[in-house]
Length: 470
Ligand SMILES: Cc1ncc(COP(=O)(O)O)c(C=O)c1O
Image 1 (cartoon, helix red, strand yellow):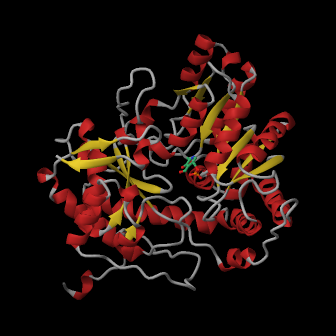
Image 2 (image 1 turned 135 degrees about the vertical axis):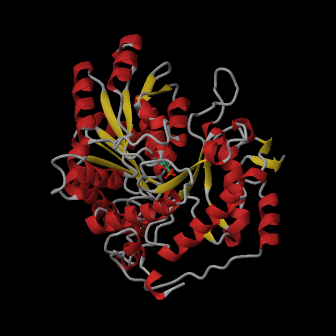
């Protein structure tokens, strides 16, 4: 290569390069095992990346959940854990942080997001209720169903079209919501389940205009709105970047305004809040808080620890403030975009616009010859692992599960393989390795065959299902 061809990635994309707003103080060694070992490991794991041992994984993009690197301050906070059974000072720090940054009044800690989903679903849903939401999320919908409710998808149609460039593909379609209200009546709708960003749609955001309009519509019918705030920092970043009037506002300001249009939130703190374990439920209505506090002692622990150690609550309180920092969120989304832009430049089909936490490969276009009931996205995740030890996950027909009425597979429009980027963990060089591996399996796509499911658990089958090669 001639010398003038050496360009930084920024130069190649015609911009100035940027770097993460942190430096590395501690490292965790990783290594790649041989291809023969990876093939054996994949077969033993039933071609399900959830069943691999993490030691057999080179670059782990299974999830951004609980996989963040904590900061020196968070680790220092761990030493400040007050492990009293009741009234730990770390709980009060956590409570203040949620109140300050999210703006809600009553806080109940939980061991992770689904603990909070359980509490809110059991507190508010009655048998026969309907819960409209901007696309389902696996654990969220299951808790709504276990409480006797039926989830109804009211996201805009664009969210189901992987190449549609709508800037806010997470938006609620207010017409769809109105139709549901007209059909079943507002008293059968305990709340709207709003997620920002929408994980299953590719990490797509909800606009401020949309949540404001949603609030107005819900006010007319006396319906509450609860927010899945798991990746709201990233949602706020997209509002800052794309929505008129928000360029000059900080992520923290945008977050607080957005939350102010909702009645409460549940949180998987393992994402935006930069901790390895933890969650919380936060609400503005005293009677809901009381129900949640009553239940948390049954399922999680006392209402001042909810399944977390004092030290975990301290790291979480610190992580809430660190995670909302503008430079942090810009670097986080920037790294996701870096990987996505490479793949787009090589004509590899991904969900667009590139979302906040992950790149979603569009398995229907990647493997057009593999029918959906031969699990193209699951196949892609297995092939990627066998090629390079990169772990991703399926977000398609396996994740969608079975229809409780018919017992048949649900066939979601989106058949995706998710490469989720942990926060503050991998470098640009890791992203290059990932991109080249995807290119290699893309080049070999025509020879690739699908899978057959040979074991299917009853709940959330994507976690433990097993497959064999066709
Ligand atoms: C959008 C969303 N909601 C809820 C959850 C559930 O949280 P947890 O895994 O902490 O139980 C997750 C986790 O992946 C998520 O991505």
